[in-house]
Structures are given as structure tokens and as C-alpha cells.
Length: 388
Ligand SMILES: Nc1ncnc2c1ncn2[C@@H]1O[C@H](COP(=O)(O)OP(=O)(O)OP(=O)(O)O)[C@@H](O)[C@H]1O
Ligand SMILES: [Mg+2]
Image 1 (tube, helix red, strand yellow):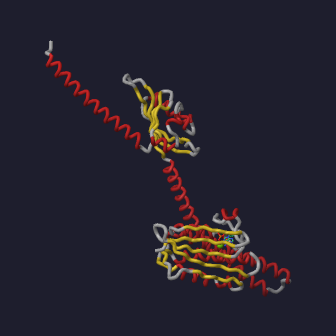
Image 2: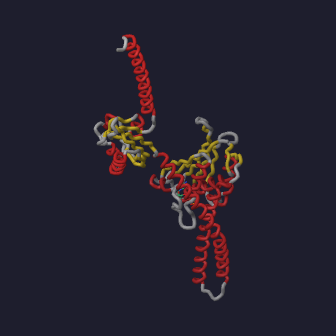
Image 3: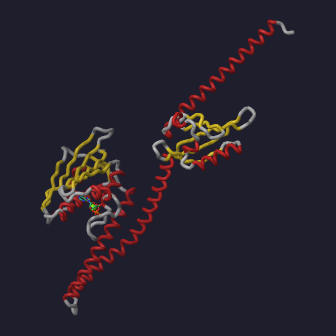
């Protein structure tokens, strides 16, 4: 028989061991609570019938539900394809091992949330399966990013192919243009042709010439688009560039009564870009404006070029407004004008590449493009570019 003192010593030792174990358990519980509380993943526990028992904060932010919203629900009810989740759960419970699958869930607002789901079986002390624990990582953004990368890669490939085709097309197109010009002059002087035949040949040849010019426009625009990455960047004064661009368009403005108004802020505004590229952008805006004014009927009209400095944001931006008093663009067409090959101009006059390419160039420079238009009154395109 052990002495009272010995028994007391044993009890003291056991109590100490117990409180140490309790401390370990507390720490483990705090640790788990912290993980559940702070994890951005959705962590849940379900019983063997798949009914939700607990649901982490990460789940609330990923799917928009609280545990109260979901009480009594099965996890599969949250999945877009309940059968896919069910078969993963069955595999987990049957094989008694962790399984992983990508499963789309539905957010409370109805949008799809793509999750990488890991399910692990939960067992009692005797090894009997009593439910499962799941960790769902929201990979929606990653999936979108991956999709974007694939698309960008495909676009780059299309660009490479297009530049090859364009290169091959340039020479035959130039030859066709030359020959059509030559046939036109031969037809003018040829003997043995009556006046009607002569006019017919001349009209046909003029059509060939116009269509050839159109092809050349398309190939040139596509080439400059594809070659964007090989451009040389320098510091340019936006005001000087805009004045130079207008002088490039003198032939287009010659037989019109269109007034060009400059409303520039004082001093130069420096932007960092490839000169030819930006010139191409502004040539397009201004020649679109000239066309819109002419289309309105009568040759009178005004094109205003304005600049403002906006230094309200993190980095200063120059805002360039190109306004015209032309036909304007209806709300419906405002959505279409940035589509490749969308044009309202007759064959030979426009290719419909100007605006989509310009927008791409502006965005690549870290800028943005917007427009305001009143049909019958006019249009203002606003180009915002970072000041260097
Ligand atoms: N200032 C404007 N006023 C009215 N319509 C405009 C204006 N700018 C563009 N548009 C409309 O947007 C269409 C597309 O313009 P975009 O510059 O992309 O092509 P395009 O001028 O037709 O051909 P390209 O520029 O390739 O020679 C034009 O055909 C026209 O209908
Ligand atoms: Mg254009």
C-alpha cells in the first residue's frame, strides 16, 4: 500500500501533466481557429451525409454566404454541378484518402467561382468515417488570367502570321496599282475604241486603283500594328506633334472650309512615345473629323484641338480633345466603332482599322480613350496620355 504522501505526489504529477495537455490542446485549438479565421480559402466540415457543419470566413467572402444561410444544406448544393462534387465526396469517403479536383461553385449573386477542392475524410478514434473536411481555393482570377495569356499568345501568333501575309501581299498589290495606272493611260490614247468602251475601261481601271489603295492601306496599318514592339521611344511635345499632324493633312483640308482651332494650354507638354505611331493616331482622329464634317453636308465646319493637364491622380496626364462639328455618332454605333474593319465609309475610303489600332496604341502607352457625341451636332474624342 502506497503512502499518502506518495499518492499525493502522484496526483500532483498527474494534475500537472493534465494541465500541460490542456495547454497544448488550447494552443492547438487557437491555432486551428486562427487558420479558419484568417484563411482566404473556404474551409468546411461536413458530416457523412455531406451536410455542412462548419464553414470558414474565407468561404463567406468567396461565396458570399454565412454559415446561417447554409444551415442544413449539403455542400453539393453549392456546386454548379452537384454530381461532380458528389462523386468526389464518394471517392474520398470510400477510399478514405484525400482527393483533389477543380469544381465550379456558384456565388450567392449567381456568378461562377472556380475552386480547387481538396477533400479529406474525418474519422473517429476507431477509424470509422464520420464526415469530411474540405479546403476550396478560389482560382477564378487565376483561370481568367490563364485564359487571357492563351488569348494574348494566340493574338501574337496571328500577328506573326499576318505580318508574313502582309509582306507577301505588298509587292503584288503595288504591281497591280502600277499596271492599273498604265492601262488607264493606254485606254485614254488607244485607237479603235469607241468613247463608251474607253469610258468603261477607264472606270474599271479607276476601281482597280481604288481597291488597290484600300488593300495597301490595310497592309500598312496591319504592319505598323504588328511592329509596335520594335518602335523607338522619345520625348515629344504633344502641341508640336498635333500642329505637325494638321500640316500633314493639308491636302485633305485644301478644298474645304473647315476651321482648325487650337486651344492649347501654355508651354510644351512632353509625352514619351514613338513619333510616327502617335502621328498615325492623330492623323486618324483628325481625318475622321474632317470626313464627319464633310458628311454633314456643306463644307463649313470646325475642328478644335484642346489640351489640359490633369495632375489630380498619382501621375500627371495630358488630356487631348479632338472635337468636330460633324455628323456625330449614334449611341448604337459608339459600341461598334472600335471593332476591327467597322467602317461607315464607302469602299476605297475607309478600312475600319483606324480607331481600334489607335485605342490599342494609346492603351499601350498607359493612356485611355473616350468619346462624347451628339448625332447631328458633333463628336469629341478624348485621348489621355501620361506626361513624361
Ligand atoms: N469624328 C467622327 N465623327 C463621326 N463618325 C466617326 C468619327 N470618327 C469615327 N467615326 C466612325 O467610326 C468609324 C470607324 O472609324 P475608324 O477610324 O476606325 O475607321 P475608318 O475611318 O472608317 O477607316 P480607316 O481609319 O481605317 O481608314 C468610321 O467609319 C465612322 O463611321
Ligand atoms: Mg479612320
